[in-house]
Image (cartoon, rainbow, N blue to C red):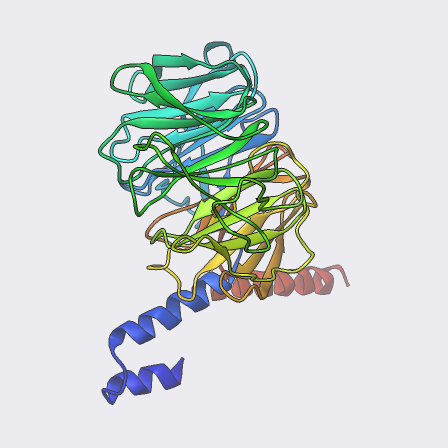
Length: 386
């Protein structure tokens, strides 16, 4: 750090270099937060989390207990410097869905609306202020995930369900526009590109990842292949097992996938090629639910890192481009099901089968001082007893 400060003072490096180094160091030091605690509300697995990007303040959670909770992450600390985040609003299980909630998403441009998907075969749109259902879409199979475009002029929800096509639901009309056909089994995950508002990626039980342009009659542009065969071939497979997670990089140039072969693969979206980045054999991923790897935005951390929730209670942090393991983190007492990054910060939140939502933040010297003070208190107590 001193070297970067000196280089900046001498005019050898721009201030941006020091900022980039500091943010990278902060992200690499992330651990289970000792100062932030989210009050336990769910009575089942926390399947999904989402933090809105308008203010980076409000957290949504949904789980197998069907309840929906909203948390204010700007809760002030108490007299001891601890932040205890409680739910500020909720939709009880009786009023939400008939079965567990599989996905939850803020409307990208306004915190007044959010959406949920469920194993009860529906996608629902909710008014945040009144906590009432605005409209709903009924599908023919249980919905594993859904997504809305963060840049789109359209208002389409892409729904991935236990049927061999993706349904596009229009928020404006409250009806389905059309379906994207091509998969040969259930579609588990679907994600809009942050670079092209009409580009959609999907992954399914047929081991394939398909890239779609929803404007075209022959909508499927590519079918990705793990061995880099011709992306136009109809026999390509991206994973040697069900594909249950997709995440784009912030610039939309790369797509990261994960599946039941317990591998992550990084795809170049310009060519459709597998980058052949090796993330090692550590990930445990056998859930049929959608599991989304979490890529830290490149304007927060460079080179970018990815966090992957794992079935064995752990969260792994990797360098996105070279696959190196940076660290593994523990805190949950069950399968880690989801994670959500908080914009304009260096913290994230995770949910798991232990019914908990945990906060993760950079290591600080205050934690060391707290541990030292506890040790001093312990020694003092021993002296008093003697």
